[in-house]
Length: 185
Image 1 (cartoon, rainbow, N blue to C red):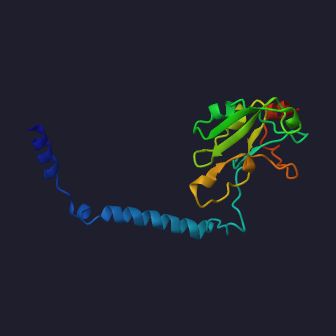
Image 2 (cartoon, rainbow, N blue to C red):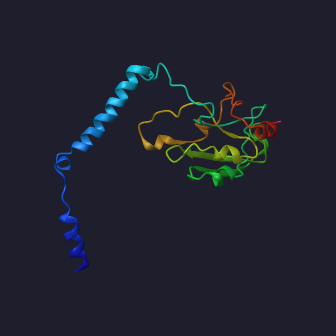
């Protein structure tokens, strides 16, 4: 019974003629448009970039594609401790640990290494928690853009895309904190 009384109260409310023909909403929208038009005339148009030829400048702390770093001797730094996967709030990192053999001594830094290391770039939120959690300074977020792909499966980056090439080292000194710089030494 209360519900019918309330619906009567709501239905009894009369709209003004201006509200019925949406005049206040139209004038509000026109005011916003006029404000932007005046700002463009007085201050000039905002910068337009012809991407990909000209890229919009990004902040110094911008985080992009991940890289698994190598040490000075070319060995992988990652020891498959799993701290990056635990720290990841999006649960985008998965890894499988393996034991190093005597023949692999020049490939891996420690006795344990990540035989499988994958990051699901569709889940990653580029927060940088993985790079902060890593005790060996093995993973970093670079200033590079993640490649455009055509299917979902190609957004799962394995070691083939993440580990830096020996000939093409990626400089991340600007992104390193003092703690990370000291851990590498």
